[in-house]
Image (tube, rainbow, N blue to C red):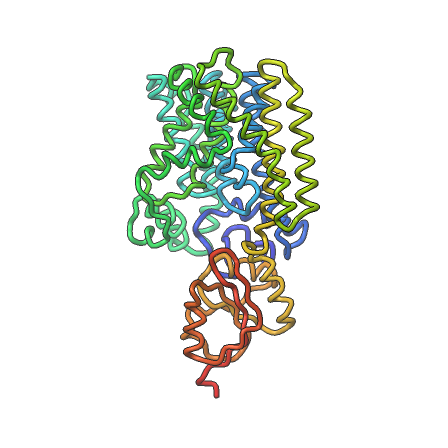
Length: 476
């Protein structure tokens, strides 16, 4: 998008990539156009902006219910929960969906309590925002939460108080311009790929959608919510119990339960699909932390979480023994200093809980800084792609295989679209070829059809990336 200026159709190495609508890609492309297209940093900025916007909405929502302390607690818990932390530090579409759903649910909660027209407009725009982020799943999550809330309140008339015609009009006004533009470029096949194949068929598990992968059983998410809320998992349990007991007063419960049931019914499941529920979970934990009365077992959960925070503040020092002594020492000292400083806030109530949240936030940042520096050489295909493109100089490089990450990263580094062949059998001309392989499957096929002179290779995650000069046998 940044190279072509086409903000309607997402493309992967020049080929239309219609898994999702273009909102996240368009924001990243805008950042790339302004700050440079050949580095990953501008594109990560898009995720950061969506993450910060989400934290701001969560803070505002809780501030209206629990004051500034509640807003800080909720935003801090959300920022340091592993699932959300990963989403707004990686280049993935889901953080845009989280932002859209959070924006819409903020408007819904305000609309259902004060009933002002501006919140109906914001709700419609939030629904449109969520669709443009990831297709029908965005509005579906919002609808599931609203339906669950109607059941919670036992009020069918709530639907009419939401001014549904105005909400629908605002949603369509934000969605239709892109839909029309997409239809003009590719007609029904483009619309079908986005709406039918990648939304409806993925949800139902129809063959064409199931072929895209990520099929899981119906109970996949029920423990995933706990795993991806680390290190706040132990507090999520008593917070959920408290919310269930006072369900009449807790709108956040519907935000979790309704979408969780919906996502569990879907055939396609991934842990990151849960992240739109995390703002509600963070608000529930913040509400529980501010409550004056907690059961004894809940207090033990809180003490254990303090222990996790203390341990997390010491873990960055492990970088000293993992080949990053300076980074490990600096991050360890920062986390330990924060621990000592905030732990001295021994006041009861919200101030002490805010200290816990701030300690965890700083410890999480320090730990992941060291961890990612340690794992980058064996997990990051960007470094290999840069070295490969530099070594090729002006010679053409052809990508072998259908790995999306390899095609996207290499194209970004090269600053142009690169030729691709899907299979080794399609290789016809001598030249430089690059591929990502598992168990040397592609390499073995290449050696069967020609002479392979491997110039460079590196283990990246579960794959081995290689670049070689290949001369097909038939060329001799």
